[in-house]
Image 1 (cartoon, rainbow, N blue to C red):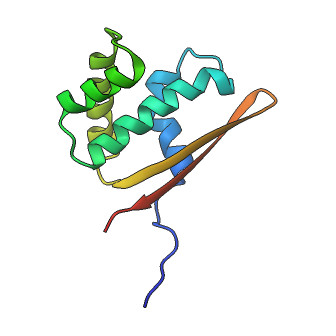
Image 2: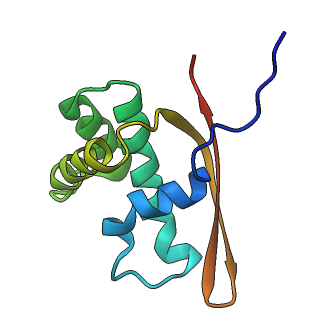
Length: 115
């Protein structure tokens, strides 16, 4: 049996923050401020990786987040961003945690590859 650690990809926490940048820009860098954006970004990321159609992903997020008129546009832009900038990254995000440390938010993300 072979055991492999690491994917050769950047840390998932760094990737998630870069992916979620449109949701995080203009939001104060606080744990509370970033939590919702990171959650939404992780949900969209996982939806794209698992092949969920945009309409289904949007409906699922609207059920979870409430029927915000902004959700469909955000989901569409994030799907396009995932496909354009992170197309080769097929990791699933299993958990996201944040911790405030002074004026910075530390993001920890657990991920794995489905084989």
